[in-house]
Length: 78
Image (tube, rainbow, N blue to C red; front, top):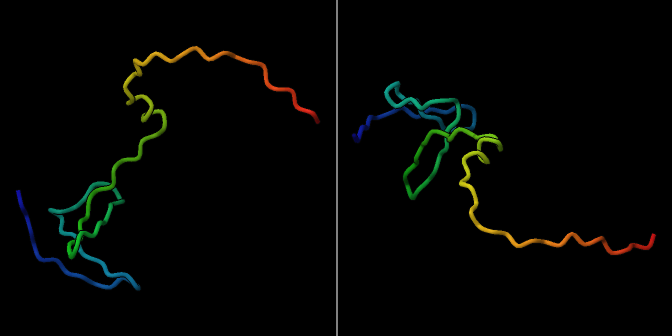
């Protein structure tokens, strides 16, 4: 599905802006703008996950770790 449509550019203060037609609306209130050559690419921003969500999505590690001896710290002279 390759949709295209002419859009209007306008100034918003010192920025150039574009009106996005309803059929091209993006979800949320943030987006990512990339420039590739002469093309501008506007994509929805990915939802930011919390650390807990990110850790829960990790695959369990099946690697065996070697035993690490718990040595006392070296003495420090104060």
